[in-house]
Image (cartoon, rainbow, N blue to C red):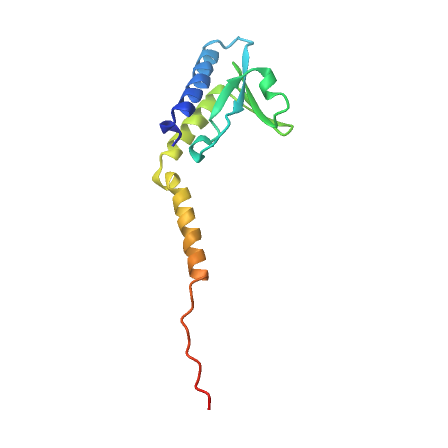
Length: 135
């Protein structure tokens, strides 16, 4: 999973450390921009694989975040959603726990197997029926 990928773990650690700093400085007006990291493998594609970037890096992006001492705002195609730092942190830990469940970890494998099995059954060669003799 994402925990096993060192690059993802480093990105998460960086924004999580910033979250802790911002929680301690409740009156701070400082904030950071976050964007979804470029994801190659399935393990890298999850909602908390975020990287801290400069404003220029999010200009024109359809999906990015800001994190301040008040909370995290997600911007997605012109819409925005705000959650407190505590809620964002809680959601992150819940996501992490869910990803550790066997059923979630093996979902992609099971889905691929089910699709293959359905395809194999649909296109299974039919037994040949002998033709009746010509009389």
